[in-house]
Image (tube, rainbow, N blue to C red):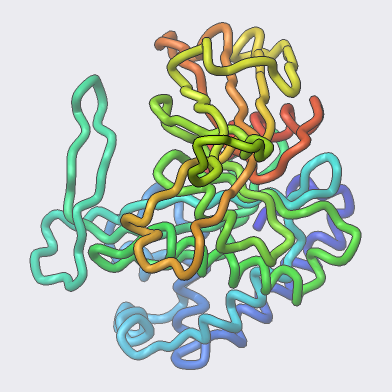
Length: 353
């Protein structure tokens, strides 16, 4: 947690002291060794490559034997620690809204052949065509985002994904538990703006929005540029030929501008890094679901999950690459210009992870 940008430094350090005391209480086994090990990890200059280096840090006042003893025989009350993290002051948007982001971050273990439950993790190499699949442990991370460009993110939860796990199902359960802890800690109450959860293209945003429909959250997810959405169900009219009335409206093909029609809202913003950013929004669009994959065992008729599709185009990229449009899906309808700007600006903050 960061206390440097808070105006009241005395209250900020008091908050940090209370969190450190609660963190110490969460260490139910070998607490002193683990607490000093955590301080050494945070205060050591540069990356930590070996545990012996931590034993030499001034913050670690015990021998290296206590370090290994704390790691091998120590115990952490994880649920209590999660509740403690949910209770610290969190960054908020300009309207007081909490903005969360979920992403998968791998801990690569290519040389640890005896480590259990390793999976192949997709990694980005330097240069074009350098993507690789490296064995490791993928972790699903949920964090609260800052409002501006920063290297600080308030990590709220991390769960290791088992090989072959349904990422959308695991993330849905994880987000639900995080939101419930935030509500219990008083971070959200009746009358507050709904919590915005930002996801990347690897998540099924409409499905997650449907599964979290009973929570005060909004889902904003990136979509692939080859997706096809459907418009609202047309009004039923009498057909002399009979037959079942249509369940979906016309197609909205991302790659075919002729199918887009008139926008719900359009915004143009001058940015420092991206030049002119133009966002277009189309209302009441939903994916056509089929009884395959995640919806194979769904009971009853398949739902119609309506939302707003946002197309973002920028004038340039800081890297000089091709500025392809970004497609987003927001789990609410009736978007205003302020809603559209909040959506794409919150999505850009997701890269802080």
